[in-house]
Image (cartoon, rainbow, N blue to C red; front, top):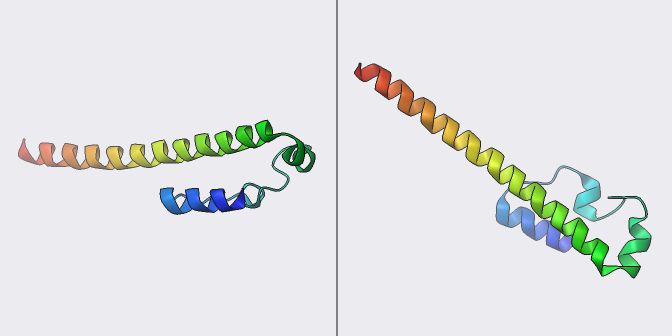
Length: 80
C-alpha cells in the first residue's frame, strides 16, 4: 500500500503528512493483523485515504476560487 499512497501523492500533488498513512503502519487498531487476513480492511483504508485526497482538492479549489473572486471584486470596485 505504500506504493499506492506514493502514487496518489504524485498524481494529486497533495503530500500526506501522517507517516502512519504514508507507510501503512499503525493506521487503525489491529491493522497489522487485518491486512494479512482481510482485503476488505484494505479497501476501507484506501477509501478513507481517497476521501482525504478529495478534501484536500476541495480545500485547494476553494482557495483558488476565493482568490479569483477577491480579484474580480477589486477590479469591479475600481471601475465604480
